Image (cartoon, rainbow, N blue to C red; front, side):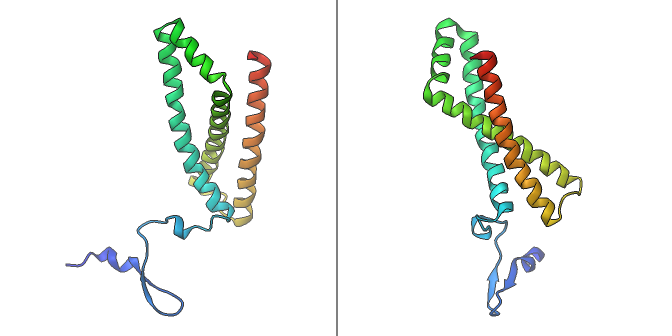
Length: 145
């Protein structure tokens, strides 16, 4: 017996040849230069980066609980050039993922689907990410530097 969903997976190209649609949109289906595709992909990438960044938080917390020597090692790494670069990247990822997530919540409420609004909110996410990242680092350097 054929799966009734199978019919929805078949399509025809403009020249009439029969093709099978992908099960879900994949990289071949996206135009990477299109703002909506690029922002969607970046939202996923920053979510993964932000999740991976929690490993640093766990390392820092475990070192703080373990003792002074372990904590000094983590602090040394995080204050190194590589550590600061990673922390800066995580700050960008956190702000981008948060702001893009708010944008998605607005979409979930059924608002903001008009093309001009989609592009405007996309630009706002990018600008907001830059502003909030810089503001975060300025405040961190002023109060803890």
